[in-house]
Length: 128
Image 1: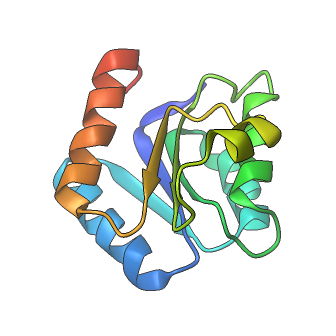
Image 2: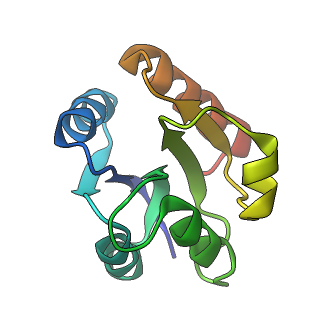
């Protein structure tokens, strides 16, 4: 069972990861962080976060691959996933990787707007 208070931020840029963490903590979330896809899968298995923010360009496994593994796993398939990337939103590449993210945000972004968009997804899905 997923823990609705936990959010995992998977971002290889420490500054961006920290900013997202600060804003999410202000909203009352328990924030877990890592900078690579392999460790992300380990944390997901152990901690069972309710929401995962994934950068696309990660060492180890890409955000696309992590997302695919989350969505094809029976225990984690309903986890809310937010894709965060410097790569512009390209529906062709999203389809190519069969990404089933709930939200796609591009860098640079406004942290306040980013968190507001996450809250909208949470309210829409009713998961957290």
